[in-house]
Length: 380
Image (cartoon, rainbow, N blue to C red; front, side, top):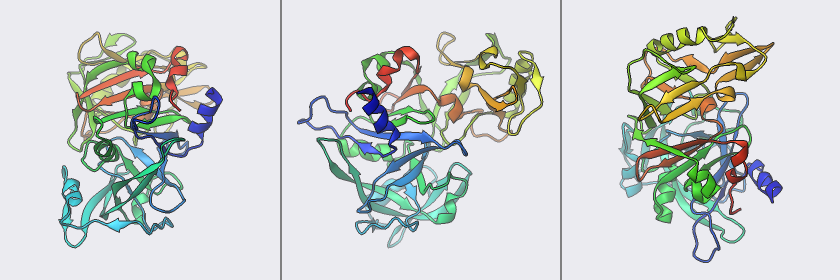
């Protein structure tokens, strides 16, 4: 059974499960298997949309406001239609600072958050295919058609972005509305068997995984991103002289955690005292000589209290660049970051994250050998 589950996750085909009263122990919501592109560090999912048999590869953007892709990239669907500028769908697209034009069609600004560029796109509608062994079906979804040059900086073969933010037309919001489920998002990132789901951790991974999570308040950033607050930072158990609380944006399009320059200066000074420094390797500033990643002190983020901590260590902290050198996967993000800390993909890998949007809470727990079996979709 376990080998079948692994084969499903490694197949890299998105599968959607919708609750049905006729199904025994159904998985509620949506499950998209995710893998990491080794060249860019971006996380990739696939969807089946329209009447085209070809899946669309999308970069997963945790703070993205909508699903968008290059509709001219060979993906042809006769069921696709543009959305009218006077429609309710176009009204939903007007969120945050998105500029929407209500002409004959619904034009809007589409962003590539990986490299910080934007372009004018057209809001469209098509059919998203979903299915399991017992409950195949379809659901209409809104997305944007964007120009091909907006794909700049995305992984090879990718055709767009899966936006998972809190906007009304993000994919999780649309699917929650269709299934009448409470808005939730479960995220688990790894190199080869990650998962994005619009259901709870318990529904997807089981009770044991759900009970292992620790929760902290969740807020929304200015761009619809997911943000938590950190009261203090500790290196090797010692608290840094950084004034808190600091807002932390969680990101799947930033490969390594970025600290605002003033915070990074204090952090780097503390970490430099912890190990034998080696020559820097781009894009890292802090590199060290070591034969084992366990030689390095952990970084603790204290959340709503000193008793609630998010610990970053081992593979979530150090990047092996070869030659017996490991670099700290936390970098200087400059002085103009929207949040003092942007937590990147490396630091999120291996953690099960439960975005309980109804209660504005984030649950987090690290996968360990003892919970390995519970971190497989139990109803598949």
